[in-house]
Image (cartoon, rainbow, N blue to C red):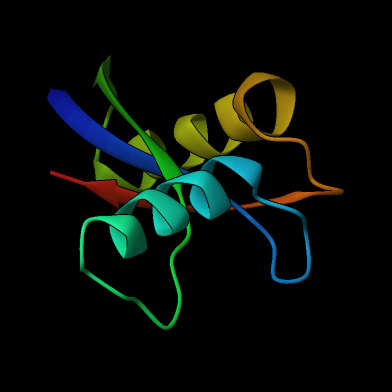
Length: 80
């Protein structure tokens, strides 16, 4: 069965996020002050898997082996 997994990769709390800092500064200059801002990357991957749990397991392996650095990133997986 085909599943689409949505993987969101973000920096862990306490990690420097220069892209977020630049965006927050630009927003402030445009008159949109914010209290906090962080960035994340979203990956949507179509997978063939026996069931949703198997798709989640494969997505977890993809995160651990390629997409995320466990030292600095956290990730979430949603199976659609």
